[in-house]
Every structure is written in structure tokens, then in C-alpha cells.
Amino acid sequence: MKHASTTGADAVTHAPATEALYDAEVLIIGSGAGGATTAALLAEAGFDVLIVEEGDWVEQGTVVPFSLDQMNRQYRSGGVTVALGLPSIAYTEGRCAGGGTEVNSGLYRRPPAELLDRWRTQYHIRDLDPDEMYAIAEEVETALNVTPVPGAVSPASTVLQRGADALHWQNSESPRWMKYPAGGSAASGQRQSMTRTYLPRAQRAGARLLTQCRVRRLSINGTRASDAEVVLADGSPGRIRFRHVFVCGGAIHTPALLQRSGLRERIGDTLAVHPTVKLAARFPDPINMPDDVPVHQVKEFAPEISFGGSASNPGLVALSLADNWGQFSHALQDWERVCVYYAAITSEGKGRVKAIPGLRDPLVTYHLTARDRQMLRSGLSRLALLMLAAGADEVYPSYHHAPIVRSTADIAELQRSFATTKATVMTVHLCSTVPLGEHPRCAADSFGQVRGMKNVWVNDASMLPDAPGVNPQGSVMAFAVRNARRFIGTERPRG
Image (tube, rainbow, N blue to C red; front, side, top):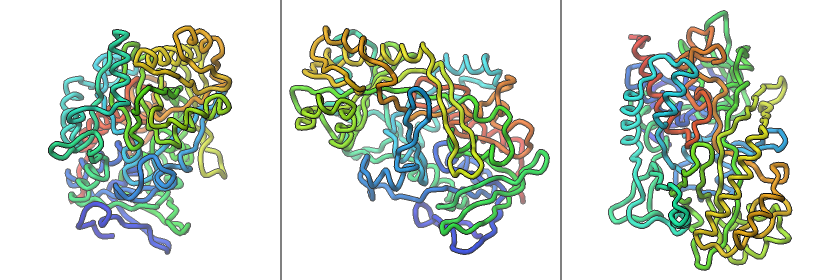
């Protein structure tokens, strides 16, 4: 198979309708934040790189953000997946070229210095240099054009700033990976996701991208993997031979693939997420921008609790009101004055990912501790207070039989009646199922090489030692670049 000579969607190779055999020096499974950055660096270093992606290439602008069409085309299972537990936690995963970077809000946070220090000492990560990590972060930020919104932020974002300022709570604007035209506004940005940045960069260096190709398992003999069994677009089988493989399928499907391939020790047992609860809030004036998300975040209680805003088109507003539809449905008539906000916590509990023979997708479970439940209660109560301080006239917490909060006195009833088993608990941040480090509980070494394997690496959110308390993609990309450079320094491309 020849190298692509163009970039972007025109350079994508869709899996053929007949059985095929592919060869690559380095196979990269997954094209999200970890896979795309790894592919670009390795291709530029002279390695023959083949990227495989289970989803399709969906060109930006061809789907409406946060629409059902986007859910069907760019999310796994239409955006409806769940980690079983009491309560179950709904989560979303991107399933397209570029992975989650194509569908998330694009808000960016560096890994905090105290987090890197804790990870280095607690998980025994060798050669984890904060200065190096921040130099990489600057490089990534330049590549993605991480920048604040030019001019005024959206009214929904101003709500968070105004409420936090009134309460004297720490808050700030999170920059986004966006490009804005001269004189542009919050609504005019173009997302600098992997299909606009690192994937074209990898292709320009000779990497190939094969979409609509699902990897079933790796063939392993002793300490080496030799090839990947794949399912092509029409359901026919194929095989990819390689010298090295980077598994970058995300915190759910990276451990599931490794388990299906016979690698199970310490893999998939330490899933970490940021459990999140939501509410909708109505204000006297219109604040809703359906195609955008607030960029302000409130970090007064971080990393334990953080507050931010969600996409709030009419359908998502209705979904937020659905847990108590009989009492809350009237708010949908005023959807232009209503937006959805969240409280996210760092969880003490953990989850598991387990590949089940005969099932396409793994079984995912998650356990919230008593501390986690109390933190969610506290987070939702403080979020309601934040909305009132910002001027909300009615607040609608997302759990069954919740009260309408119109004053601080109603928050006591919220605290009394809230239970996680009655709430819609969800997350968009999943990580830590193949954690890196030299600690005995880590499934990969300090640079992502899977224990006991000579040519298998992970380089995505699964390698983060635990949930970082901020959007994890900045951390994922910094570690991915660090690990890719370590690989380039120890391995040599074929001549």
C-alpha cells in the first residue's frame, strides 16, 4: 500500500471490500489526541506509519455540532454508553478520525505542576521533568493555536464569571484550540482538532490513514506482537503486519483490545473518571448560544470540584429537564434564557473495563465511594448557589423529584433530597486503565511500554495514572509527545 501524497479527507484510505494484507513499520491504533500526535512525530522521524481508525473521516462543517447527525456519525453508539454501577455513569466517546478532539468543547488546560509532581512520586514515573513537559505543552499549544476568545465571551460564559465574582470564587477563561478570523467573535472560530492539525501533519510526512477499520486483536508470541486482525468496512477480515504497535483507542477500548489479545495483568482495573452532575438555570435575559459552550470555569474548590458550562441547544436543555419533566418542562418554552451547567469532581472510586468473549464492546463498571457521593451533593448545591449569585430566577437540578431553586433557602431542600441514585451522573473524561509508571500497580512502564512486551505501547488517556482534575487532553498530548520522542531516541526506522 503506497503512502498518501495528499492531506486531509482526500488522503484517507477506506478499507477495501475484499480481504487485504497491510504492512507497516509502526501501526497506530486510533487517531485521537494520543494517536495523531504519535503518528506525526514518528512519521517525521522517518518511520513508516499506518494509522487505523474504526470510525470515518467527517469533514468539519458537514455536521451540525451537538446534533443527532453528529451523534450518529462521530460518536460511539450514538453517544449513549454507560458504566454500570449504583448509580450508573453515562459517558461519551468519539468514534471518527480525530477521536474526541472532533466532538468535545476544545477547552484546554495544561497538567498542573503539583499534579505532575504527585504522579512522578506516587507512581514512580522515571524522568518526568516538569520543565520538559511544559516545553512540550507550549509546542502543542502552538500547533493547536490554543487561544482565548477574541473580544467578548458568550453570555452563558459570562454567567459563570459573574456568579463567581459575586461570591469571590476563583474563576478564569479556559483557552480553546481555535483559529479566529480578524475581528472574529466566540461564534466564528474554527476548531483546530486532529483532522486540522496533527493528522494532516502526519500524512504530509508519509503516514497512511485507514478509516472504517476495526482491530479485533493483536497476535502475540511471547514478548512480541506481530500483526493485527482487523475487520474492514464491509465486514470482511484483514491483517496488518508491523514491527511496533501503539494502541491509542482511548481509556475504554485500549484495555479491551489488549485483553482480547491475551494481555490482562493490571490492565483495565483502574478506570478513573470525573463524575459530573448538571442543572439548568433560567435568567431574565437571553443567554443561550446553541452551537457553542461557555469558556469560563470556576476552580475555587479545584481539583476536588470544578464548575463549567455545557452545550445547551433546545434538545440538550430538554434532556437536562427530563428527570423532573412534570415540574420543569415549562422552562423549555424560555430555552433562549436557559443554559446547562455542570459540577465535576475528582473521584476516589475506580472502575473496570472487561472484554467479554463474544461481545463487540467491553463491560464497563464504576463504583462511587461515600466521599464521591457527598462531593456530588456538595458540588450541585454550590453550583445552584453560583447560578443564583449570577442572577438566575429559577434553577432546575437534574435529578428525580428535585425542587425548583429560586432562593438560597431552597438549596437546603436540594441538599436534603439529592441522591446520586436519583441523578443523571455522566462524564466525558475517561482515563487510567493502563497507567504508566514503575509502581507495581502500573500496567505500562514510565514511557507507555506495556509490561512484558517489547513492541507494544499505549499512548492515550489510558496511560494517565489517575484523573487529572482538569480536561485531560492537554496531559494526554504532552505525555504522548514525550513518549514518542523516547521511542524515536531508542528505535531506528528501517532504511
